[in-house]
Length: 517
Image (tube, rainbow, N blue to C red):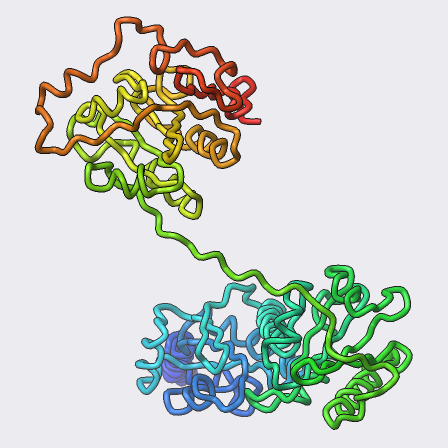
């Protein structure tokens, strides 16, 4: 008996070992071997399986305008497997809440057939989630929580934005200043329907029953009636012009016949309270207007009230800033120019590039629609020109404003002359703007000048020797033109005295302790 027992043991141990080894290999295969796509999503489930064959037809070139959220995955990906039940749960919830307006799809990027499709949308990791709107013309990455609730909320947010945009196109919100164009200009050949409501309700947007009415008069891109709405608490002028009493007359629908021939009202008592009744009443009212039944009625008025026409855009002039030369001095500064010529006098040492250029270019742009011209001149090369306005070398950079005509006059804002400028800091745009604003406002004092200086042609200038002639007077305490600067005493009305006008920057900017008031 013992030998048989030992033989039995020898015969059973290899079989047990074989079974255990087989089980280990099988489990390892389950864990590591690729799982077919159908293991993640059921063919008959709410998640739509997309591939290279049907993607364009279902998403990018679809006949229906459906919002798609697509999951690009690989069957062996652990994160993809973890997300799969949440994706399925979200698809089921959206089917109930959104119907056919939104769908969740899935693309197996491990399938050789789909590799080009996944590459097209830059899928570099798994899972990648992308949303598609407007028949695939708009795409964006998913940035919500990766669970069923987060997925549903993300899609609902996208649908709400899409709905709002669509509703705004169906029945845009009107303002008092938009009313003229809506009633008289845009789509003048078709009638208009304007809803005037008192205040906001549960939603800040257009009432849904109004867009439901508007859509009945739209076929594709063609509109038979143009709809709009206005909220009285935002824009009371519209109701006022139509002589609507907000305490009793709102909400009211105003029907305006084509070419603004007449308008009629549907008052609150006829409109009703419930959304369904409002749609029926509004449609019946608009239909009467279209067939002419409202003309001559008790609540009908000829024409439409007057609303302000939109202002025509002001023509924008070209911003111009140029060097002052003997060739342009009579056209851009003196002579035929009838505005104020603003001359920047700099110590440029014969070069065209200097820090003040950028400030002057900005000023020229800022004041391009005002009667100002902007030029610059090198005081070192045109010393006689600078001295004519009392501008010394230490005053550079300086702004000289010149008015020419029957009476030639000028005003100066200069560095180191009590004007708030410093030759080391250059031209300050804020101070220069205040100087120009004072000129445009008529508050700047201009001084007379008997004759305006000329600009010497380049070929007549004396080279380096000319620069030496633009020097400071011995009296370094003197202001522009030798006049002491005494704060606000030199700012005021026009004076016929001999002293040039010197700007007090404190008075100009109304400065207190260095801060602009």
